[in-house]
Image (cartoon, rainbow, N blue to C red; front, side):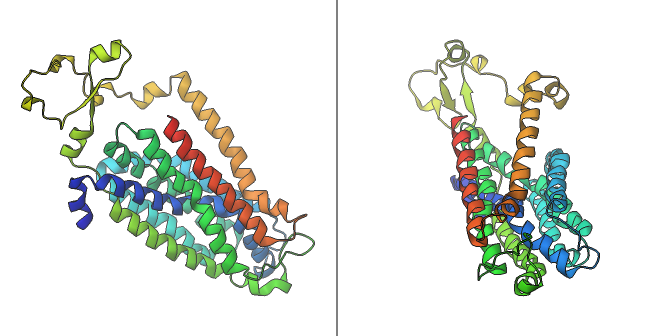
Length: 343
């Protein structure tokens, strides 16, 4: 494959970052649920028998199950990557995620419970498998800029709603109709509601195409590429708190003077310094980060799911509220890149 040939001339690194960013644009449409909630719940209330009583608050189980699925199966992604490779792991995750979106075309015509299974759990499970491998590949290409390259890739996760909020609202509500006084779209806006099932076919098609392009761009570096990018730090530099970094692809043998760095002064291979999961969970830092992330996810998840439903109680402009969510995604993305660079 042409991408595999290009990776040997150092183009593989930038391509992997671009591919990871594109992939995360699709995975990050989890943040679009607040925009979709008003259409989906209104459709269920008006077009599905037995669902007339459903409220926006009932639909919050959809992103909740997606987040739960993502969290529970994230570690599975690492095990699969070791066994079937990066691309196959990403492909498997994308297949689950996009299949969930496609299947929602059918499930939303039956019940919110089935919709929660496809647009919630399947979406989250697929995201769990595809989320981390692109970042692992990028860190292998850029071992000295791990925070920045990770920030760029997950910046795509934050940016997804900026693109797809607009796609969803333009397709479903091009004339910018507002819900009724009770906050829900009714039979009077049937032209909007009848498009709800088909929007999942549109979204699934776009996601699938973008994900295939991303998978073609993402490739792990060869052993030679990895060796040339690993920083070698001398003990004296560590002791002086001054990082003196050399690279294995520098030909020290071409110099007239012998290298002052002996092989004994080079630090052990990073594999020998790895920490097992059992050791990690015993550290205070792990639990501080874990609880911080749980609390952050809880608050962000609730705001993301209900912001538009709440806004519609006093702002009668569907397009404006979609744009609010879209621009929130810009800051979400920018913050990820900024803090990644600061690491």
